[in-house]
Length: 142
Ligand SMILES: [Zn+2]
Image (cartoon, rainbow, N blue to C red; front, side, top):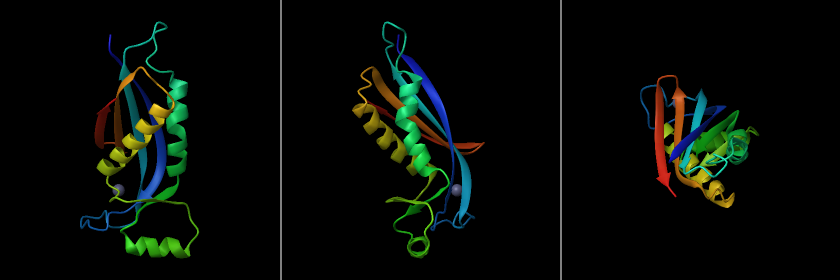
């Protein structure tokens, strides 16, 4: 029977959306919550994937993002700031919306899952929550 398992991760991160006019253009942060769901046919022991293996795949990504600023390379103001200040920053090539972060994490986690040879995983779903009341979700078949 096709079964979906999920694990939750957390990190703190700052960002801004330069194009926004409703407040998100300012530097601010979120307590991000990430749900990683993998779906597949469980093996004879009853596992789609070991939660420890899932943690090993996702945790390095979360640690890299934690207490950093997620900086869109097109954001000249922040690029200039980080050029002159040695702070924890991760550079990306997209506006740092929850939607784009979800797609980014989907791609990164999918790549790592394929490398880890989690052969039973047939579908991956990523949910990124910026606040208690909002999230963005994307999924991909394997
Ligand atoms: Zn925000």
